[in-house]
Amino acid sequence: MQSVTFNLLAREFRVEARARPLIDRRGRWARVAVAAAVVAGSAGLSAANASGGPASGPGYDFGLVPLSQVVPAPVSVQTEPERTFFLNSYSAIYATAGSADATDAANLVGTLLRPPTGYALPVRSLARGADADRDARGIVLALGGADARTNPEGYELTVTPQAITIRANQRAGLFDGVETLRQLLPAKVESPTAVPGPWAVEGGHILDYPRYGYRGAMLDVARHFFPVATVERYIDDIARYKIDYLHLHLADDQGWRIAVDSWPDLATVGGSTGVLGMLSGYYTKADYQTIVAYAKQHGVTVIPEIEGPAHMNAALASYAGLNCDGVAPAPYTGYVQSPNGDLCVHNAETYTFLDQVIGEIAAMTPGPYFGIGGDETQGLSASDVNYYEGRVAAIVHKYGKQVYGWQESLNSPDASSAVGQFWAPGVNDSQVVSAAQSGAKIVMSPATNAYLDMKYTPDEPAFPVGNSWAGYIEVNTAYNWDPATVLPGLPASSIMGVEAPVWTETVFAIDHIEQLAFPRMAAVAEIGWSPASAHDWTSFSHRLAEQGPRLREARVNYYLSPTVPWVWGS
Ligand code: TNX
Image 1 (spheres, rainbow, N blue to C red):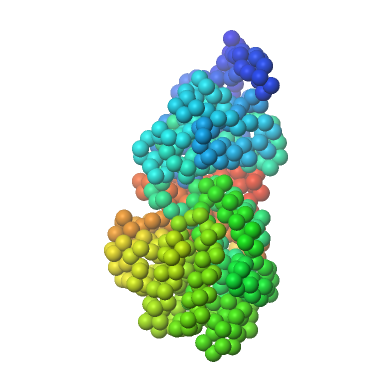
Image 2: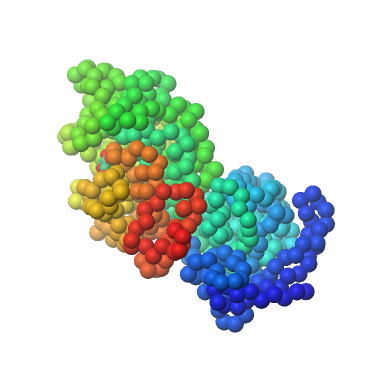
């Protein structure tokens, strides 16, 4: 046995290289040098690498990431630095035999790790109850048998020299574990092309589960239309931080973005516009199904939203019969005047329209929620709004979905079974509290902290996009809030989670979406995932700093906020 001493950031540790028999990819026995890192002295590898910079001076840098460096912060972490795992060209990915969920998660691991490593990483099945240390050499996705605290969502991740095991009791937890693993590999794991290893992961154990089961991102594809590839890229971006819902705002004054067979002009007429005439278009049904399936393969559930009764100009312009006066208005391509058109609340055709639109979209949507909008109805009387919300809720229920609306929709007689998204304090606070007391669930999106279409700062010269009506939201402002205290009187048990919207009146490229969303999306994700006791800006900002090189490797356009102590190279 050889023993070599390396110098890592001026701290010494010793690597013992042993010749181990292994079975190579072609099934032959091979003798391969496997390195096991042993820490000398009191400085662990975590401490050695906590600054995140490259090793200085001569020596060898495994790029080990401390297990505690993850965003959002995990619930509990135990490190065992002497049990470091090295992914190599002989490694495989294992999924619990017979489990489609474990196989999907294993396939995602393969999709993420094959390009940067260049390894084959075949997906194999592993018997339920198998001993990963004995039966696997690689990354194991194991369904069942995880700590009960990971119900309904969460995972355990165990790293030994033989295997990294991600164990969860349900599908969602496996995907959460995959995103943690991704952050535990060196930043170059985000490279779209093959780069040299080593691919080391620090030994130890993580037990992790979310504070809130719902952590959403909303993308407004109505003001400007974004093609399927852009939405898929955004799904990749948000999944990194364990965002598990993508709320798609599919219709608004300036555009209708989804084909509906029974109302074809919605797409061809309503989809032909966008703010300032830019980026028009719509998703075919196949496109929408592609997005939904892609999201599922990344652990994300899509919520479609058809806004109403306000913000409906694109539909009103498509069909004259939806208007109270029977006259279709001109398309609207401005953005100052929105809401800009209400559905005709007491017109029977309105509900035939909603029934068919919601029916067709719900049939393509596996997730439990259907978005009905319901915000900014100031052009209508309270009783008309109430009537409309009751009718639309009945339709959503008929198609087997739960109502997901903006906070104003909680005036509905059916609000006790609905989800309301709280964005504007002071609009109808007591209505939201009483709906929550009677059973409604609340998603927190306070515009002053979680609206990612707000600019970071007034004096960012290179960044013309974004709004400011809810203020300027620096990264620390996106982090320093607590869903439990946003609305006094709200029962804690009614808070379902958090959501960060990107409205796109001023946004017309994935680069803009990403620069607005990152790194603030990571802040909102940690608020929604990590225990309140872990909430700490200093800790977060240092962990976030380590995300810089990752986002850069992944070519994500993020804002280099001066409030974040970015590490060298980010
Ligand atoms: C308010 S938030 C709106 C949207 C705008 C957004 C711009 C909400 C439910 N309504 O229609 O796009 O502000 O920040």
